[in-house]
Length: 516
Image (cartoon, rainbow, N blue to C red):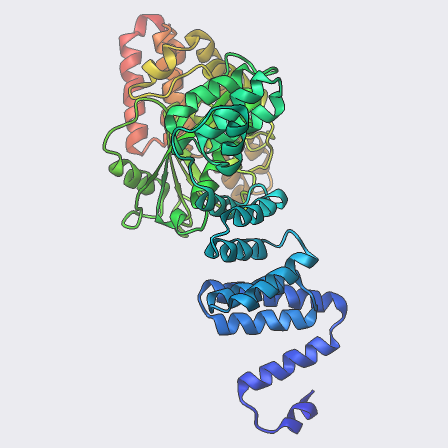
């Protein structure tokens, strides 16, 4: 290799790197060439996103040389040509990409843009719909298709052929989709009607007045529970979310997936009825600060529904708040970090369940309520809780108004005590293990004990609310014990821990005769 380089003489460093890359390509086996192609494509995409068209073209061309006919390379070269204003070259590359791989995303987007520039909107929509046939959850494709098709003009004939044509031409118009669904229901085509209704609910924020009616028709279809609940969601996106192409559809799809995943346990349809913007730029990276920035933007609380904030800001590197989400326990507000690794939307589903009273039982139990796991199943303790609380409402006011007045309060108290009892038992088991480890290692024992009895603000909140419910049920002794448990979980030296202990002491004094 050194002899080969010396033969070229004193070349610039960039030229030497190019020679080395060429020699590696010639010598590489197929597997390595494939890895190199993938690397070049990733680097080209980055350069294109940064507007460095010259570098992007060079890398795409090298990837195409590695694998002639590469759909990804042709699609990228077409995107570069389109940015440069060379429409004929862009069209050639896009057609080459689609000839080899009809699912090439960049080519579908590029072809749609060219056709739209020419005024051929129907053909542009067809290109985007073909892309969505291969990638139905692609938010940017959805956004581009909506930009092309828009909402239907008001009025118009209501004969069956016109209703079908309007829905086909404007696939994201909630009114058009609801009208189509009603037609399909009347003709007995429940499956197609369901698709139209789900589409109408996906984009309900474009016509919020349609959402309750569409949800009602959906609930009335065969196989659906007529008592299925409808919960509106008021979505707030910060600047880091809005910077991503297709962000509005990304959020709509996220809620659609959460509703589908939680339907078996909650029997509830979650529908984004409004998309709002807020800035977290001046807030800290922790979720509490981001939520406060969102709430500061809300001038008037909605009369009904969940308030959900979303951010792409990374977790603080040094702070203790490394969570991907947080929710007010049995409240109506949540905040979620949008994480590319969370493709299935597990974090959002997990936080929604906190709004219904679900708790972290134990990391040892496979459950959707284990934040460190990957399970989508629900443990029996939380399943019992949700069967009681799914009747709750989401409106302004207290837990008493939104939850306790609408559920079986005695059953809720028993379910909370049972779930917290499991956690306490597992913590006690951890203490027993720590005592066993003390025989061989005091350091290991101290670490195990700290983990077993460590602070847990989430469970402390649950314990405190459970104590209040128990006191309402005139179960004073259990209420005092639960409030003392909250104090331990907050941490005896923390302000919240001292306040919880003071409350427990007041209860103990007030109900002394019942605590013997």
